[in-house]
Image (tube, one colour):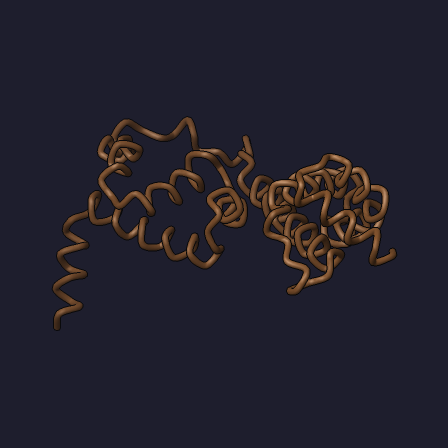
Length: 188
């Protein structure tokens, strides 16, 4: 691809001109599909990944910096990361499917239900907002950590840290005895 065409596409992206997506698809679509397919190894999933990648590319077009990476490198990374996220998401959903023959849904008794855990959403409001946002995205909106990072526009490492700290804060609410023990142990 010529550098002039690449520059033109970048300019169109930064201007939020929809022609940029057409040019990207025309010039990079097949290659990005190949990148996605290599990761997910499934035609339909690879097509989904390319579509999601183009949405992310459009949304993040103002973050592209030509001094940090060539356009293709930037597109490649977005597509590859999206494919990895998609693969993880599909694997997680497959792992969590209910197996009717091994399910113990009918054997759960009233005594095994913990009423104090039903109010998670309300107790979520008792922790700092930055942790609330991450926990809400991950547990109530069903996002992956990468999706939460993209959606909330915070680094993936920060999402992971806030998840860990947020869960620890919720644990203090639900199990104050373990918190007291934790505090006692950490002082000695």
